[in-house]
Length: 340
Image (tube, rainbow, N blue to C red; front, side, top):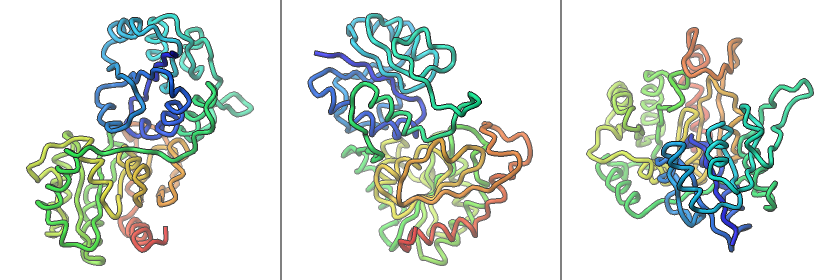
């Protein structure tokens, strides 16, 4: 039996973009043993999937390597480009190690794959989902395609039911979720007052119910947006007596009519559940995280200083401030009317 360790990405959105490759690898190694090596919170993103026989949390370089060494690996596939992931796989011993030759780790890989580059040697900006699929194809899988896939658990659906009831969302013909946060950094944030204006417009023009999502670190932001909207149809998840979790966010996105979001993890939840989504891009290249989702609209202003890929804006945040609520409303209405 072939034992394969799959080292998963650390960003929530990247994990979702890896799901076509993960599904293909499970099918290819259907008689093998697949071990998911991941940060603890990633497990919640993939909850409900049957792609792994066991999971090893990525908790300390030496501790993780020791646990993997006991598994007697035959193959390690590295989705992240980090030196650390290659070092852990190398310390685990014995296995063939497949990954991209990045960040000085080439000597740790048995099968170093060259990333796509321009003629001058610079890295070519292209969708990460395609890079992940290339890893799966390298070891023998058929092309995985671009259909991302996620699942929800019964307990998360029950919590989502409770949110729908407590926020009174059943009263509205359409429910729009707003996701203002971004773990990457403040440079991805769209102004809170813009989100509040969009929420008011959606409520008044389309009679939508609006729910502002948040993670534990974004409670204050979500509450402020709902308060500034000043409309009873606009509620903040932070103001409801429910425990926040990635599982709950998935269940909420799965049932919404539209998601308007920064370039962050929930955007990819929408693609995986085939929900319409408007994504507000600022400092990041759209091409890196293109998902090929047919019900998506990407909005981004061309500015002389971007896309800068910086976590914190070094100037005046013009890439996000010049993207106005009226423009986002047009995109939202197009998707709600089935034009997107």
